[in-house]
Length: 112
Image (cartoon, rainbow, N blue to C red; front, top):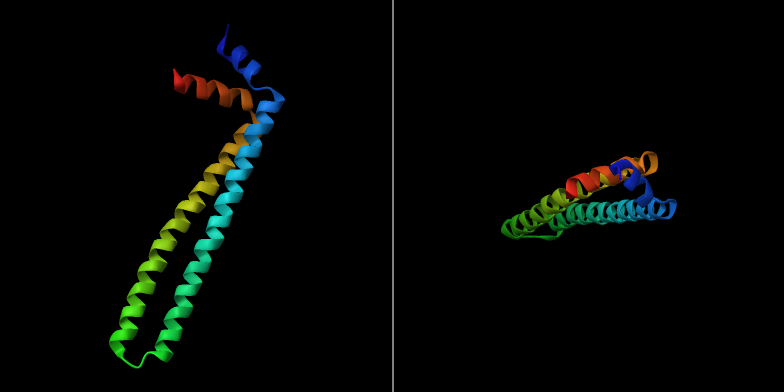
């Protein structure tokens, strides 16, 4: 049996619909993660402005600034990874929506 014929038997409409739904769920999860990471960055900015007006000692302000900067940078890096995950999810969604048989053939060939 030819590989494309075998793949066309695997890529039934139900299987493809399940894969498309999985891609959409992955994208939605990453979008939620981006929102959370962005709100963490906003909270860090607010904390710096609040510390600037509330801290009487310069050393205390510098500590708050350093901690907020570390958290914001980590969150920005995580947000970048989540955005890359969204891009990958949209690529997978496009492949499953347009040519599912070729996707199955590629996955089978990679597995062999």
